[in-house]
Length: 271
Image 1 (tube, rainbow, N blue to C red):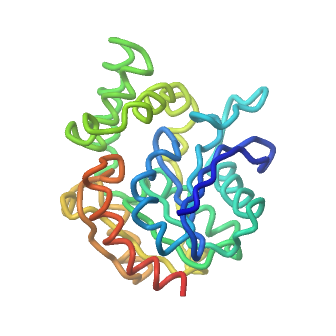
Image 2 (cartoon, rainbow, N blue to C red):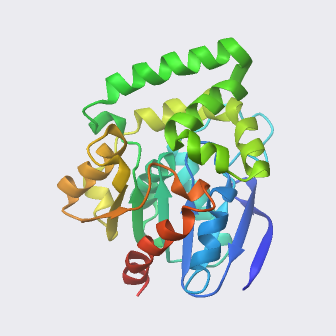
């Protein structure tokens, strides 16, 4: 199976990216910690059908932090994704965005619809349209404050990852990936988290691209899937329920059933 790794210039920065497999291109956009390694096991499963592309988002892990970069926006993150697809000459592509990556996906569709053939939004963070946003936000604020008080951004990041992905998934994660993710706490809490939580999607704009909304079966009825439920209602799009909680792709043993559940939707959108 083809495997390529490297850095490429895109939207004024250097983005580390990984390419696995052959077939129609599918870009995976991660949420918190922004690391391409979120999808390394998923890529191994899907590489027989697709060219799977994942990248470290701007300022995270192996991607560069531009000189003077002290703030970001969902617009900047979406433009990075579009520029990466253009630089790799793989447009139009199917794009999968999860959690905060699903938020970025909404803006990518709004700003660069021609770059996408279709989209899968997995449990996107859409706080302004989520009924429990205020309650969850307060819970997260307290948890993050406790983490910073007891060990700074790295400790706060661990608490967040355990909350988002479950203790089981966190403990099973690849050690190198986990270290990179923990070390990205300063970027996530300092520059990104408020951008994710304040983003309001443009309903008419995101209708330009075929979308499948996805949620974890273990999260049905919880705040984690309020963004998924909202997309289903507002767009009337297909909603698929896939194995796991919020981040099964971090777990070596949970990635295959998760990827296999995505395959029919990816095939449909890529056709």
